[in-house]
Image 1: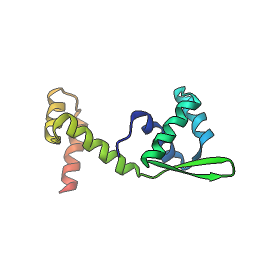
Image 2: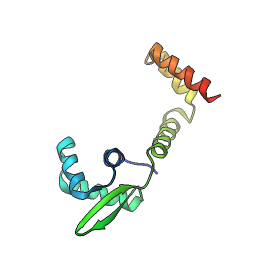
Image 3: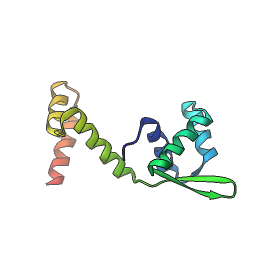
Image 4: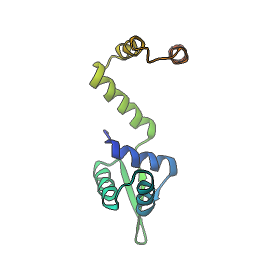
Length: 119
């Protein structure tokens, strides 16, 4: 499930805090991002339509919770990024990062460790 940048802000808030009411989400995003109440509600409705969040009604309040796991969303986003920019080729991405000197020695050591652990 592809999430927009705005949807990522909301779902990360839910992953980090568990289920939150509409007003808790609105307050947090207004404070941290300056979003208007209507913006937050519009995005929550869109996410509910997509199935990335659901809500339960408690009295007069909606309490939202994520329906997708963080790891699942991150993996899909990573695959989408690789497909879009590197035709799915992670080797090409790493090669480009090395050529641009964007990876530190520590980064390269971490990549080597990941490869060794994955074998």
